[in-house]
Length: 473
Ligand code: SF4
Ligand code: SF4
Image (tube, rainbow, N blue to C red; front, side, top):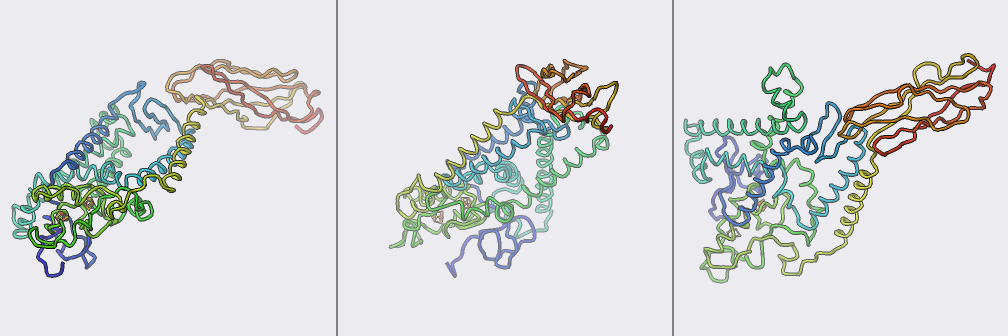
């Protein structure tokens, strides 16, 4: 390629980055080169737009959708209660997260082994917001790639260039602010968010600070940092070299068919006409013909770009395509392979463990705690222990609890409140007392209290403490 004149691969109407040769979004001097990808049309771009729209719409709608009287997703961290698609959890259920996250992690490994970086190109919030919202806004104000680059190159400090820059970033800020408010609704609920919007920020400083923080995060990540997040920060992206094997689906270039690249009419050339179209549409600024690269987020833009070129030339599509590395070499792709079996087993184990853990989850918590003070008292020939029963209603409905001591030949258990109603996710502490004739004391012994609610029963066990008659008080 040396000596060949090419369109500038990476450029931007933004100021500062030097236009130097290099790979991806980094120049040879180590400075960032901001991509300004060209527009591309095609089946994959259309499909991705539909998916992005659906994901953003779902994300914005979830706080509005009510299931069982609560938002479909409502993470009330302040009161440690969490509503997820009709299920209700509280702080005591956080251990379930371990199984859920483990299952999700194995699910992602499995997905990567089969579909490569499908998550990055189709569903990662970074890609969805950059390509679905922020890039279209940039395009709206600055125009298509060539127009924008020409303007930036010729008149970088002109009024025209400046107002476009200011308006672009103002729109980024508005989009980031909107996204931050929707995000906040997941944690404070919509009614609370409306109420906050109508009051002074000083009335809810924590929520306001979170909103400012997430706005700044979204603005920087989606508007400024963009592909650098995928290339430099994202741990999943950095792990691709070990997660992807020769049989995972990748976006790749068919070397055999494309090389040696050259002009369409030149003799002895492959199908690649070296038009550079696949490069200028790439949001991370790489050349897919250089092989599989860490920077490739499998967005498919280069597939559509090259298919369009092939259509115009009357050649078959698929010079750049979804395929495995083995398939691109002309061999047969293996679907079932050891790592897929291992990931499947781990994924199934993770899902099974999460389901079992969720099924075994009790609708309430009940624990007996000893009352503060001495462990026992002696009064009129009787030993006496004081406890309190800590009840937590973990369901999303008001529940009635009945408390009854297990039968005992000599222990007398007094429960002042044998029936109690507790509001959804509420808790109560109920005292109860146990007495025993000191003459019958023969050592510490268990005390069992049975708690029942909605057909579910739980035996709460604690220990009766004391000392023989004439012993320590
Ligand atoms: S778009 Fe296709 S033909 Fe053009 S340079 Fe890329 S691979 Fe070659
Ligand atoms: S190489 Fe192709 S698939 Fe990969 S990021 Fe660039 S345009 Fe997207």
